[in-house]
Image (cartoon, rainbow, N blue to C red; front, side, top):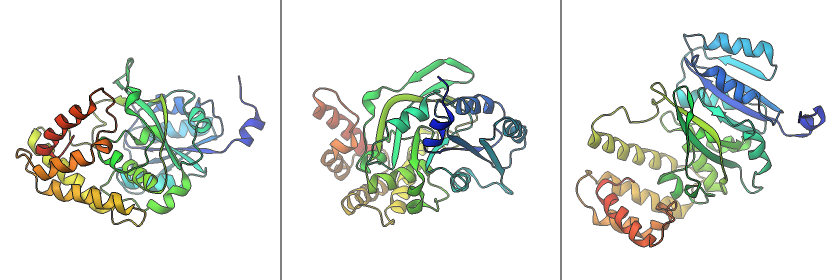
Length: 315
């Protein structure tokens, strides 16, 4: 059923915020899925980070056809995090939905998330699944037993279920977490602030489809072929993330003490030697670290994974 002008005017404005860089190949499919949303009171704010393909031309064509589309072009390349920081600052709505340039959304994604938004949350996330290349028939959803509300930052440090492309947050949350660090993923940074000041709400439905292809792995360490080197980089990255975040005034003291202890233990690990202090730490906090495990006889599962983590420091 078409949405009336009255319904649009009475519903909050949602700012869908997208950052682009040489995204011509898949951009149209994602923009179409956004502009087709059943929640009609949206704006699409796009900031292009100096693309040298046809991305800007595509954005101009959409701007001509739909006045909800607004795009901006950076004078110089800002990089992933700072580009999103700028894009968020340009949003006019009180609710922000980040978007990757190459995904595909369910047509009712925003409507479901807005209707189900918990009153106590400034940040929510839904489930997302993957598909490969151009083939939507390869879609694979994540099992929903993995997802739940998040009230403790341990759950974001160990196997976080939150991804930027599947979250929404209130714009006011940016007041406490900007400027973003250059080298810490914006979605982890914002979600850590949200979990420190309230509860992150979970919408247990797959509403975002994340496209996996050769050009979208730049945020990860998967390009490092040597496994031991990659794990060492992950340990160093985790220490840096934690030590940076826990300088923030929003951090809860108990969680700060615990997770800085974890960071300190990580520094001492070489990836092959069993660490009794790390094992003891993991078993002490196992219900938070393995929050996603729902199997019977869960203690034995925790014990097995704790032994493995006591060598690597990582899940």
